[in-house]
Image (cartoon, rainbow, N blue to C red; front, side, top):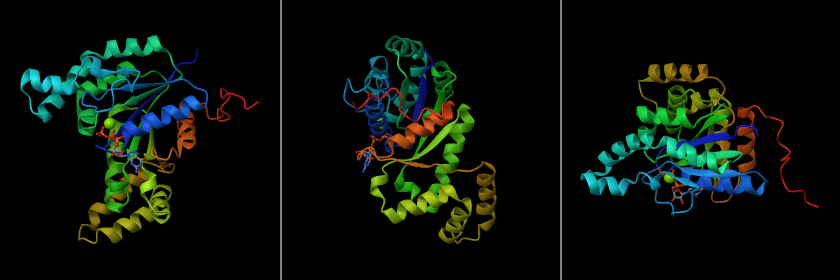
Length: 263
Ligand SMILES: Nc1nc2c(ncn2[C@@H]2O[C@H](COP(=O)(O)OP(=O)(O)OP(=O)(O)O)[C@@H](O)[C@H]2O)c(=O)[nH]1
Ligand SMILES: [Mg+2]
């Protein structure tokens, strides 16, 4: 059996990770594949049973707060490290369930996921050859040029930290007007448009900074393929699937060969 594809859904707090994981899992299943949902967020408020493997079975934010008298932030930090101690249990549970795709919902606090060494250990332990990060651009930020650039930087940081391929996704695309959507897509397709928008948006004397920053963005390569999705409306799922397939090197697997035939 081919190694499963493992996808880590990451993004700023409230970007729509948990919703997208579930919407994508349901699309993937309807297309005839198996998909496992793994919750790695110890503070998740998703219903019990909405994931196939749930870190809350071993580490729970509320319990840590009670047991050790920690505040919400202290508990988050402690939890981030404790998850790493349970990674083999998580891995075993995933392997027992066997699946084509493993969709991992990561903690809401992105700085904990991005910057704790424990997260690196988790990602290393759970990733095989077919693994990728998925980074969600929340339209609340992505719709302004400054916010868009900040998200690009964060996305690049994750790629740099984890040394995995990365697919950029625009989440909650239903909240944007068609004009806004076209504008944001334009920024991801043509860096020149982004630069122009940034210069307009931030008319400060700090032109130097934005010029240098922009150069770095250009060097990072084409940003093309910010995939617009809406978990609410279930749109963009096939495009997302195709992006992952391209990353996994099975670019031609687009005919949904496992899909139940219509006759
Ligand atoms: N309009 C719209 N709202 C969405 C969509 N996806 C998520 N939301 C809303 O955005 C909020 C956050 O969604 P979550 O899926 O919990 O986001 P998250 O990134 O998992 O959040 P944390 O884990 O708390 O960081 C919720 O109120 C969702 O209902 C979408 O596609 N469209
Ligand atoms: Mg969540």
